[in-house]
Image 1: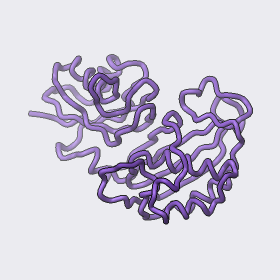
Image 2: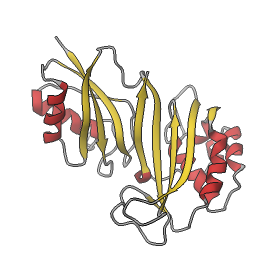
Image 3: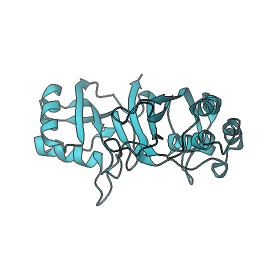
Length: 253
């Protein structure tokens, strides 16, 4: 008898080379596999719904693995939290159908990007934000981002070269707003929240990098629609650094 366990993870990605296991690299998938092995002795490679890049964080990464152990899901949560490093936590767990696939069954993913543009530099949140010294015009960024909502070919917003056959994705919502920045004072940050049915490699970070060009006044809001139509990565803005990006949540079919 085998059982499939589904977990929701949170992690700070600062000290990891992303989710996916790599030779001689510290990865979230690697430390989770090591923790599972430490509990049951099984050599299991858990599968994640999102392959977050190096330095990217998560509040709602969803993973699953098949085990021969008879441990209940709640026991797995407690045992893993006692074993994992302090920058990775299991928020919840449950047993799911053996057919559950965290990649194919994912219907929507929500990402958040945090930009700190206050007059002072961030201290407590410094590993979680992109520090920009120039104050951003977030309403202009929102006006620009509206062009990306819907079903489009996002070739211009993917790092090249790429092996993905289809560049068509659907963005359900894109919202830009000013946030207090938690403990960094009032209106310290601009947040970009994007929810879609899937994302190309570095798509969110390229979107944010392009929106920032609008926010600092270097580009007009209409420029984002022009990037989308061009289907050419070279015409888009820079790729925002990974530290400001967090995977917030995933919805499943």
